[in-house]
Image 1 (cartoon, rainbow, N blue to C red):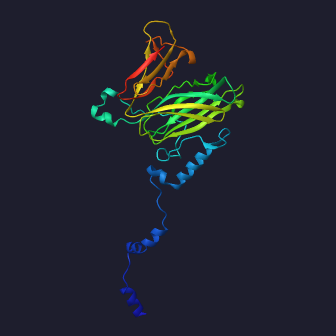
Image 2 (spheres, helix red, strand yellow):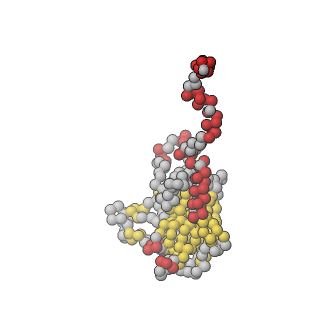
Image 3 (cartoon, rainbow, N blue to C red):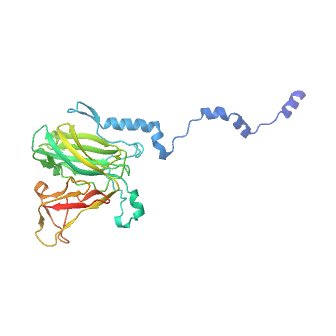
Length: 308
């Protein structure tokens, strides 16, 4: 007994820290890995699964294309799918007056897309059709909705014949560069009863980063229609706001206003009273509310507006 007591007293006493050091390799292996940083949600497996669920929810069977297609854009590196609201409108503003930008910074202006028109080429239910819904785009600034066309059921646009344009009202800001840009089309036909309304066009278009200057025209056949969508890439882009003030004359403003540039002769309709009806001028300053007041231009282009 005395020998055992002596051996026990001679045995070195281990400190808790030493025990942790010896078993650290085993405990580390059993320890769960910490969750990813909130700023790196795209590395989380749960996020990948959630994106898959959201894409499935946005996937519909298109009877014209005879297949299932996702109708909504998803970009896991830009927006966190667990909290992102796909219906929220973009209010971000990054533009500043051109005359405040030094010449040394003009070469750093970003790329953007300029929307020229969206036409209805064909309707499987004939004409006229009363169309409402949304057409929007998304960029990498905040990935929120940049509306190009937005009408509710009580304010539908009547399309009387093939080739007529939708009355675009956007974008409300110059689209920031993106890889890719997304366009979401969600249009319906108004019937006598809301329960009888039908999908006119529902599709998703993605456009990769354009390396050169070009104008692209796409035919989009979906559900009950064929649309023509035309847009142009703009390098070293600036946004221009167009306005009209009537100094003297009638309260109603009749005619049309189109814009084009020296780089591209395609006309963008900013106002057309024959197509979309005349609007009254503001009593205070005589300003006219244009259907589409903002366009995207090459910073050194010669822009032109024509009124007729």
